[in-house]
Length: 90
Image (cartoon, rainbow, N blue to C red; front, side, top):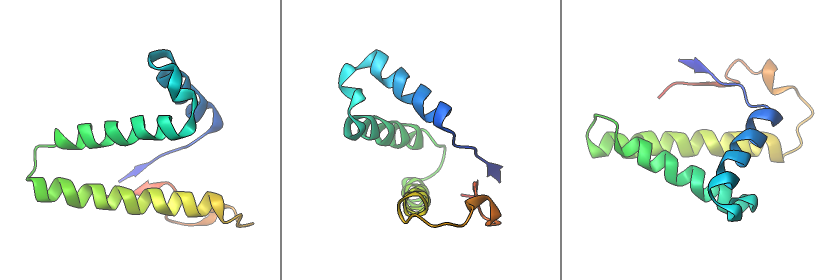
């Protein structure tokens, strides 16, 4: 189990790295495509069966969807108050 910490600085720095390699990554849609490609590529190297890799990707999608919903819905509560905040276990 791991705790992750998203910050504006982290997100900005990742986008800057992508832009250094491809100016088009300044567009959020292109940047997200790079991130998705990296997730797929890294997952393909996991030393498990392809079905387990696919299950892992589905779990990652569910996690990404929850993060998206948390940051889109405009909830007034502090996500850090949620015991599952930032914790993901494959």
